[in-house]
Image (cartoon, rainbow, N blue to C red; front, side):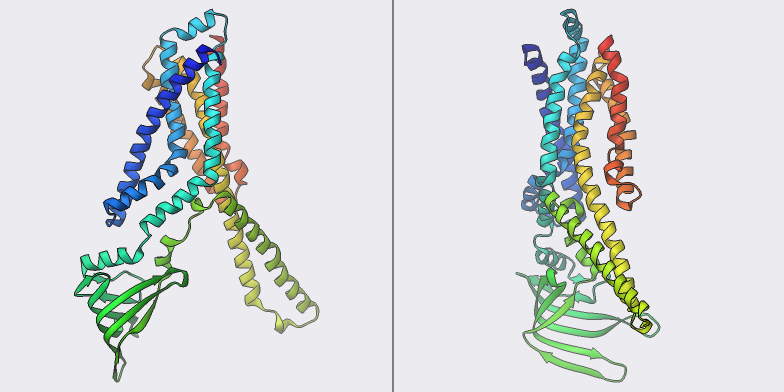
Length: 404
């Protein structure tokens, strides 16, 4: 690159790094504050461990906006100082000072595409694991604070006198049930001098070790009492309690998405076809009573589930690439607008670019995500509508900048 191009590229890079640092700090601050308010149990150590995993998740949003801000500021300033006029007076095209930034934006888009395939999803998953890394610890903190645990959907109401070193002292477990009139009641009560809980999420089970416990089963006519010691009480984890621990689609790497999509397509191609052929043979041979209608219905339901899963996974995959390449389009649009607004303040140029992005680009991106997940439109098409709009706006702006 020439001295002029190195100068422009250096100005844009310095401005970009400063704005990226500022925006990342703001994003991380809000995200950590939101998590802290939601859980209310994050310690300073947890927050310090969480921040390195949150920062990568913000990059697909902070890098494009920081690039847009930096190019509007830099190109607005050099145009306001008549440096663009000096370039054209030297017989050079205005594209001479724009090309370096386009190459920089293309490089950053390539980096975003790469990290979005693996590093960012893994960081998002690790961030969630920091929050849920010790479910038992979180449970004991809540129990020590409130002295009881009564979450809707859980089969037991738990009350304790105190908690010391993950040991519940004077624990009472009341099993929830329903009367004939559908009103709430307790069908059994367990009094334990000490109790310990162990969460087993893979098996959807909580195991409670009871010491010096008394179990009372309430019946309509009699009351059964049983003494137990070092016995284990198994409590199933309800489906709602398992959702936070399940991996979201944003936490899958591209390699994992490819494997999941291939497995889902294999299920669609084999399972429903196998049941359909079997039912067809049974019909053809007149064995109507042997047709497994329940199995056919299950195959149909599972086929619909796998189709939705494929749509969600492929939509997420195309969303990552589309947002990464959006950085390049932000620069393609922001550089000429910054030059056009040379005689005004840089904030006007930034807002003039950012308003169409907020009102068109991101809503169209959300629209494409919904269309792709629902299967209404192919994700490859749905996720590129917003980028197409930015490209059209750039085509409309560039001729004026190059000509005048």
